[in-house]
Amino acid sequence: MIRYYQGDSESIAQLFTAAIHRSGRHHYTPEQLHAWAPLKIDLAYWHHRCELKRPFIYVHNSHTLGFIELDPDGHIDCHYVHPDHQRRGIGQALLRYAENVAHSMRIPRLFVEASKMARGLYERNGFSVLRNNNAMIRNVQLENYIMEKYL
Image (cartoon, rainbow, N blue to C red; front, side):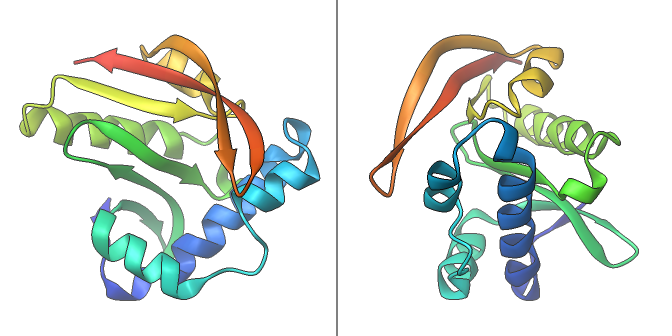
């Protein structure tokens, strides 16, 4: 696991877009997927976001396979694994790493707006659904789940 450094934003943006469009197609409509992750990637936005969020990145053989963002209040803002590498324990490893960081920072609770694809991973890792949520992204509604875990 490594911490974000300046040259990683493009690979993170590409991974994010691929994960949403390839993994989400069975759960969300094309309109929802395009609102969530436009195919025309805004690299300036992603560079700024990564500089601000400083995600933890799962790298193997110099390839970015996944990433997770942990905010100081315990919010997991993004947590994605490249679709070619899903179901191999990478998402689990990223989540465990974020939990360990949260423990060291004395963060008592993690919370996330989990997608339909991610809900099962979070439930298997001790998160509980607080409620269904309808997020608005670029004027398109997406259903997700507000989930939490006390550490």
